[in-house]
Image (cartoon, rainbow over all chains, first blue to last red; front, side, top):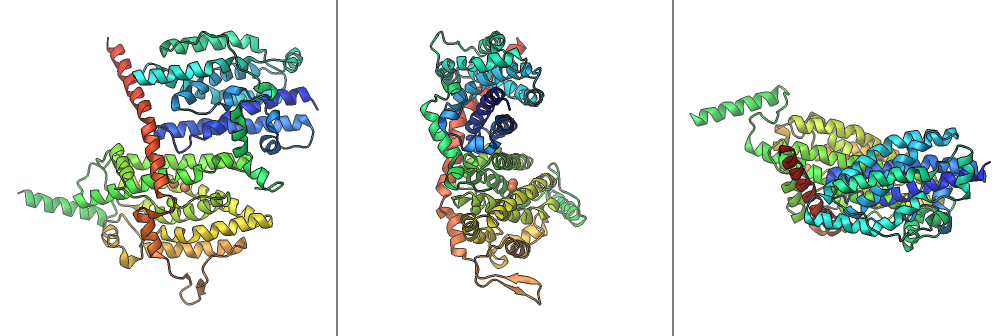
Length: 250
Length: 315
Ligand SMILES: [Fe+2]
Ligand SMILES: [Fe+2]
């Protein structure tokens, strides 16, 4: 049993789970039918990734819990997703900008994680990378369309970026768990990803005629279980069945 | 001269129908045939899209990861069905956005079943089992519809519908064979969805004025009552298998005919729901309208960007 691996895996899992949940809220309400389908696809991929990762987190934890136990029966403080993932959908622009900041991170993250010395993590990364490439292309293209579309869409996209930018830094959070696993060749050193991420973000933002906010103000805490007010409501919904009918199978 | 041509065209059309040759978009067809198809296919497309809402209502509350993923995939399939069907409508010269506006204005109808609320997880089982089950009964004969694009869309749709029906039956079985609370939840769902599911096949044949014409055109291949009976005969034993009770005290097996007989369908309820007075009609249409209105700026942005791109490439 390796609790560092479990902790590390759980972070990746929680990002996928919580963002997947948010994106799934669009299902049936998308701005165009084709986009409804695309967003649902992304939600499905994220829930699928979350499932594989939670299974592995549960196995490495060694406490006899299942992936579903981890997904549906933890307390809010025990979820370690970044704050960005739990931010509300807002309008379509806000959803897309959130997704773009995240997908760009995930693209480089999974590329690196494919080389992890942990074969299970490497395998999950390889499968997820294929999906993420598509997500990244989708969200980048929409950022460009919205940013360089109409006056209104530009303003909405810029407002979303101004709102969400301060949550991006947390994607690069690292602590002792990371350093321990980096030394073993298992985890990704996120300081190596940061410049790649920023370069790609700048590139797309430029094409979208969007301005990256000039602020050093950073919002974080999710990785350590300190969340925004939004997560409690999300969990109340997500955990509703498991909490109302404890111990049953579905 | 013109009249002779029309007679010839009608004869050619009829001869294709007689020989079971599909009518294709560029073929001549009677104006009423076209109108009937536009009405029926767009109504069908709207049903797929509005049908996403009652199930979408439970995606964020699905009880475990597997069910969440399966439900997402299922609702996504329904969006895909809507897409194929809107494309089929467009082959008849109708405009997708205009038909959608008719839905929003209340001019176009959609399946009345989606105006009932989904109030428990068991409803996800009941919908898959009964509603998709009934949809299969309706749609399998449509795979042989005389209009090519509709028939081909139905072939694709039917493959996915049987997966929908199976996942629904799996959900409800798991509940029916589960704890007392779960069984009660399953029975309650069956009680609420049974009669509306039977109404999905439309009014009795005697009260269905368009049926004969549609059958002559080979758009429809079976009558409402025939399909309803088929559904009842298949579904009643499934309920028995998992220990649920069909909420119909008059239900009985007729040895001679080899069919189940049912009590009286409450057609007043059916017509009330069809005409806009079901429990969720307002919410369903409002949700679709909101999606369209909220998405307006997004669609405008996509268009504007495409234009800019074209202009840049040209210069
Ligand atoms: Fe469907
Ligand atoms: Fe279906």
